[in-house]
Amino acid sequence: MPEPGEITSLLHRLRSGDRAAEDRLVEKAYPELHRIAEAHFRHERAGHLLQPTALVNEAWQKFVALDALELSDRVHFLSLCSRLMRQILVDHARRRATHERAVESMRIDDRLEADALDLDRALRRLAEAQPRAARVVELRYFGGLSTEEIAQCLDVSPATVKRDWLAARAWLYGQLYGDQA
Image (cartoon, rainbow, N blue to C red; front, side, top):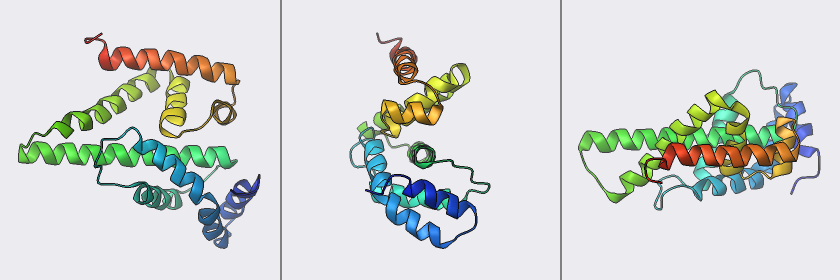
């Protein structure tokens, strides 16, 4: 586990142009990024083609390709990486669904894959109505961040995070399963 503030320090060095900080950052952050990737896979179908290590690598490639990087600390860095991982998984699900439709093959896994797409669509609608609540879902459900880490990232109280989480869960449940409830 990196020392407190070490990732933040490396982010600042990277932002100021220190390319050596990039190698050190990936070395120090990798265990946490892998933990986040594993959390994402707890919500994926069995037999997914991607694995946590591949997801971390793809997210890292997207991270280093970003311009105008303005991350203030470790929590913001992990939040961004979690969001990148989620987008990679959603893009993968879209490509797979498109491929499956193209070859007109239906398997039981297609429904599970559609659930990921349905969840992404519902989260996008939630983000339009309640942006902070949608961020809480992304950070907690997909990123595996604690209530306190989310509160720090969003600059709100832990109680606000808990309220947003409860409201978002109820809203998403209604969107995803309303006609089945």
